[in-house]
Length: 318
Image (cartoon, rainbow, N blue to C red):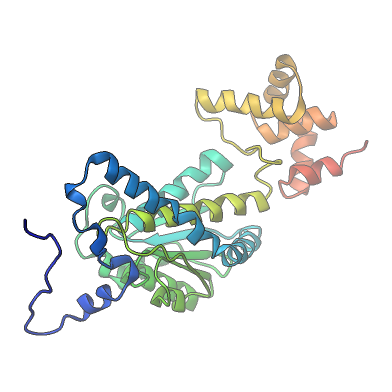
């Protein structure tokens, strides 16, 4: 029986990139998994599940840093700033995914949360050769957004060394924007380049170097926190209800009615009347029902309170 343990390659001269990758925990070879392809499928699934179980604990070590990032982002977005993710490959796709889910979930304006991926939209479904190695491409993508100091750019890279993510963070910081480096290796160049560093160290992957696995899961968990808790801070929820949901299809329209019901305890007819009076705006309809005001008054109170439903309720008599 031959062993599947990789042999040390013979090279005539050292490759700097190979040396860099070999030193990263996410790229490390797991000798204990060298015969994984010989195992029963269920056993491989159990091993993979056990590996994944450690990701939330790795994220937990970064919670104080993540919270600091969220407070800084929310303060800037409250002044009209934007949240921009920049990454390549899996990291870029995760940023685009998170950004694309904000409009239907939190009724964010177009361009308020942006996902940039090296190589552009084509890179979402196929590899764009060389795009991740271009700092210049990141600069061009950010310049197209006309960054301001109220914007935040989050560079996302499992290795913490991807040129596109590094270039984005370095350029954004030079322009005065808030910068965040999200990586899955300690002491990364990306973390050093950013004002805020979040390094979720998940260790070697089940399949050596396949950072769409644990590293990808860690990045998704952190991005979930960044966008969701920032939106909570901005008043996009009432308790844990998505009161800024955009009802763009039948499912979301049904969800809107349910959210109004959970927030107010009102009956179906009252809910329909309130939603009709407010053009289907869930937050406005809740204020109409709880404060006993009409649609225009609800809109005014919410505008004066910066969109925070609790503050608008506190401003109504009774």
